[in-house]
Amino acid sequence: MDIAHLILLFLAIGVIAFLYSCVGHAGASGYIAVMTLFGLVTTTIRPTALVLNILVAIIASFQFWRAGHFSWKLFWPFALLSVPAAYFGGYLQLPAGILKITIGLVLLFSAARLFFRRGDPAVAPPPLPAALAVGSGIGFLSGLTGTGGGIFLTPLLLFSKWAKTKQASAVSALFILVNSIAGLAGFVSARQSIPALAVILSAAAIIGGAIGSHLGSRKFPVRTISILLATVLVIAGVKLIFTR
Image 1 (tube, rainbow, N blue to C red):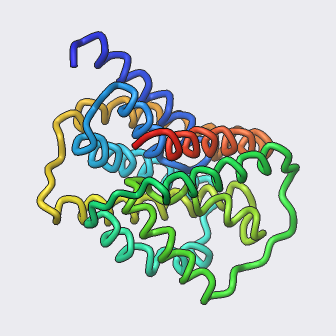
Image 2 (cartoon, helix red, strand yellow; image 1 turned 135 degrees about the vertical axis):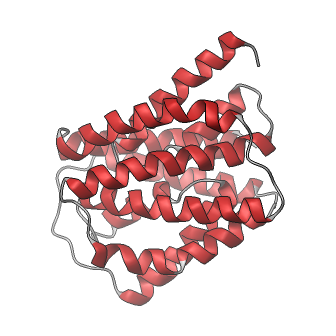
């Protein structure tokens, strides 16, 4: 990759990190889409996306926790089984074309609903068995697809009325972090290497993630977060459907 293309990729990663971190996400699906457009190979894309995801998720987790939106009681049931499931998903190297298309359509449907969502309704905690089951399933999908799972968890928390918007963002940020670490560990355990490109793009992800998570956790109103989240889901859904 020449310098001009590397600079464009660097800027694109920064913009994606900003957009995703505003809603407590880390950007893996966006990174994957952009790197695919730039013609990078899968063996480079997947680990690079996970490394960038971990960095942005650390920042977003801290920002949303510091702003008072994080709930440990809501987080741990979803995270408990998701970590080993994400490790297993990251270890596997499976063709998942049909699965990705199906998930992409679900994300586009979720985005459409979020565009018309107004305010935060009353919420209730999820049943423990449901949270454990959902967490393990999302963890496996996150490892398999090279994402942190937030694009699946956040809309589920909102539509099931298990969390308010910024609380869902805060829980998803840490959920993404632990699952991205597990997914990357599974990838490395399969004797795959982390490319040098991940180090180069880290600065862009850190800058974009720091600005976005600060604005999302402290400045943006709930309606803005919902619209940004819908935008993120559209990007993720289109990426899953049209990239291989």
